[in-house]
Image 1 (cartoon, rainbow, N blue to C red):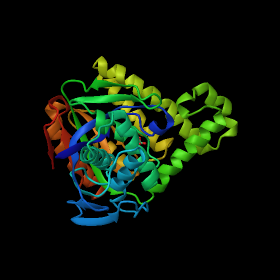
Image 2 (tube, rainbow, N blue to C red):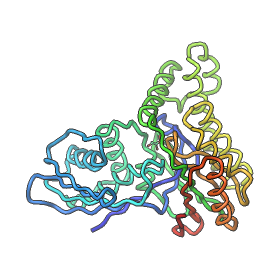
Image 3 (cartoon, protein in one colour):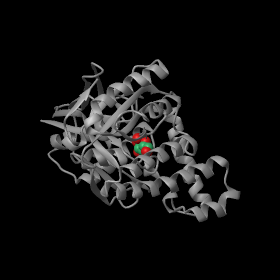
Image 4 (cartoon, rainbow, N blue to C red):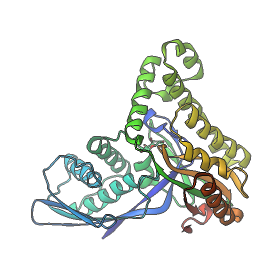
Length: 359
Ligand code: GLA
């Protein structure tokens, strides 16, 4: 039996999840498929169709290898820790999400793996517990201190919709993407080497800033508190907090604007989010800024911003559906002209759900 878990694009609410804030991701049509069967020995045999490689491990081996196998192995070990009875397993993983592009290929591998392994063990888990287990696997086995957004949307995605998630309480609600709009995901094709370390560093900075501000997490920071504590913060700490305060407010404004079909406000909020990630959170890069700028005056453009962890990867654009094919083609040309890099543009007709094409 095969199990599928989707990638995601985040419409707004970036670097807020691990600070207990709000996010608004949408599952996309690109996914990872995992299939597993029991073995009668003590071996965990992992096969990736993408890397054309097979790796064999002792089931009790708990040493990460620093490659793709850490994602499924982390999940395998966390499942066992949670009491799921697993011994020897053959697991095969096939993915279509571009790797390292900020579209959450890791979480989709984790969630598809967890579903396949639970099937082998003949057990089930509720979706929230599954998402949290996969996040723990990534945090503890690969060392990436990611938040809960990616794993959560991989189990809670809904067609044609984004999901508003309160990362403190895990309360969530489905938010339809306004009718007549497409999501155009534009991959800059760059991934900066600093990304891994910088992500964990941002998280540590945020946690430290919350401590200095006397709040349990930046979710609870306010503009007044930030002004009062500014003398005790470094410039970087001040900016990280300011981004979280303004970004959380933007997510809630975005929901209101989406519900009232206020496209102009949606566009303004996305532009403000990008500027805040670039200037206050400092996770954009020249290529992401170029992709955002290249989209500005194209036909059908409503709004756009970087999406995901940053330092490369993708932008997300809200585009009038009728103009989406023209927008896609023109963005391709405009970005290539600016940077000399041929991008990958993924067009998703949100209102049609699964229709998509890759150029
Ligand atoms: C990565 C992480 C998420 C989230 C985003 C930034 O995708 O996996 O948990 O922190 O970056 O919003």
